[in-house]
Amino acid sequence: MPTPRQVLVVEDDPFLCGMVGEILEGRGFVVHQAHTAEAALSLIDKHDPEALIVDLDLGHGPSGLDVIGALGNRIAEFGVLVLSNFPSASALSPGTVLPESVGYLMKRKISDPDEVVSALEAVLSDAVLARPNHSELVPAELSSLTPPQLELLRLIAMGYSNDMIARERNVTLRSVETMVNRLFTALGLSSDPRSNARVKAAMLYARTMGVPKAAST
Image: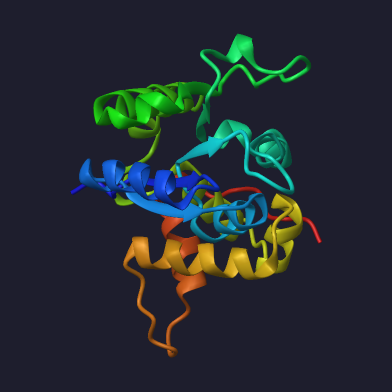
């Protein structure tokens, strides 16, 4: 059974945020919600979602564009769909430029669940196409992992500590610890304190994907 895809909805209007969340949950997605840019970035680190739906106007403080900009090169890891009252991306305020990979949806279309899901699936497809073919390159034992989880497993197999991963990925140590725990759960590794899940994970990667080059110290 495939792992449910996780989506973060970033919208300062709780009603609209909840509405989008209900639509996606009804279609089998796992949904997380944030009402501010700060909360969004924290939840991205914590939950490592496959997709983001981001309102450009988040009221006072940083905007949806700031959320997208803060991701930097990591933007390629996500399917990103922006929400706005403007009729199209080309009608946005002068100087507002969205990355090519980002999709666009008018807020008035949120009332149509099919429009929301179709737009989200489109950006998810583009994100998948931008990566190596996951199903062809990854052995069966690791096929349930998302591409970010597979990358995390590779770093663990290379000998990276959680602190090294946090610095490499420019995220907090706590978020790495959360992602590592989620990875071990996805792999079905024992939480028995007498065993070492990190060693088991590294051995699994080495057995299925080959031995990666060791991390430098």
